[in-house]
Length: 280
Image (cartoon, rainbow, N blue to C red):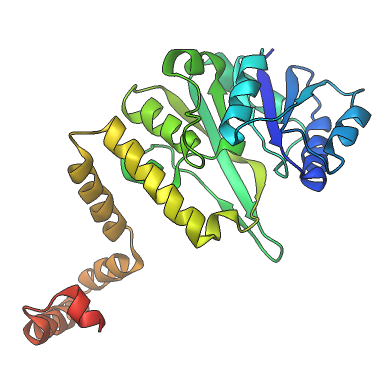
């Protein structure tokens, strides 16, 4: 079997139905669908019972959080590659398995495609690069609903860290890509629709995610943290719109002279002042 699709769910019956329907439309038989439910009370279990005629396996019992649930799915999986399509997200293509048969034969450790992010009033495609840099993965990670991860990789590197509440998939990719040097390939196709629910926009959750990321960085890269943070900051600056504008101005002789003049003037005006003082 090529692929195990793993879905975790807790009291999200409408999202679960959307995910189940998208997977049920897959035309290939070379996959299995595993659903790990956290003992929902909103009708999710009844929905799963009605899907018993499809090729799915499911269980419903309490767990400590999303990463224990994902680890349960890994242990149940028999596919060579795992795709984590959580409750609410949806696959785009019915022939998703056949599309990548040749890729799976190359035996790369991770295949990752692109996503469409969807909210109530908009949707936006997001394309991932062919080559993964440290700053990019630090900032964006890889899309778990668009990444096929070799099952054996979890046995080699360890399962998701259940001590974290929010960033263990990010931790897994940082470890796999930049400490273990696993092989990867980009699939130039939109794999899934990722539905935004405002979860990551909660300031309290953002703060907790930042704290967990800092702990992971200090544990994985204890002697390199300061240098890596500087590298990320420099990379962010180089990718900013302001820096792109400066590069375009530098390409024009006249604009370059005007730009240099303005910059010298600004330096004279604000020499010796900190960013904090300028922001007052």
